[in-house]
Amino acid sequence: MLPAQKKVLIILSDASSFELRKPDGTTVDEESGFFLSELARPLARIIDSGYTVCFASPNGGKPNVDPLSKSTVMAFLGAWWIQRREEELIQKMELENNLLHPRPFASIFWGLGRILNHFHTLEKPTASLCHGPYAFLSTQPFAYKGYKLISWSDTEEGLVETLKGGEITKVQSSLANAGAVMIDTLAAKAGSINVDREVVTGEPELLDKVLLPA
Image (cartoon, rainbow, N blue to C red):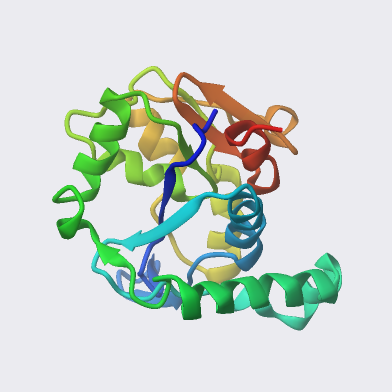
């Protein structure tokens, strides 16, 4: 799906927390960031396939790694040697690429919405995972109306709300309200990807298999 000898733009959030709204009306900031494996696994295949990678973030700030993805428990569940390899890849990108200092959107296409509209208009392959599809809402008017998408679900978000004791903004329902067709059943989402026109959403370890030639 990706043409040969091209650059791949990887957009990461540089937010280090998300807002949690408590029942008493107060809000607290909960630490967050990207999951190490969700970036490292597709990134490794992209680099091994000979593509040049450019990182970008909303404000040009360094993306934050979610502390949970580096925890001892997660290392045990995912095999510590795999996590170690992923950490080494991210460190390599920090030293040799621009991961420590991503380009701000303003210096690329004057805003996230314009980047996505540019890719949408020219039908350039666009992959998004986990909470990432929420960024599609930056296109005004909404460019992905009628698209079938997979994202972090309201059910999964509800589990986080129960654990944290508060309410958070939900990706799935926000996209559905804007006109996207959300794939939300566990059977349809589990270990799967979805391709609708130029947009690929789903499991990070499977995205590269659709985007990159065998």
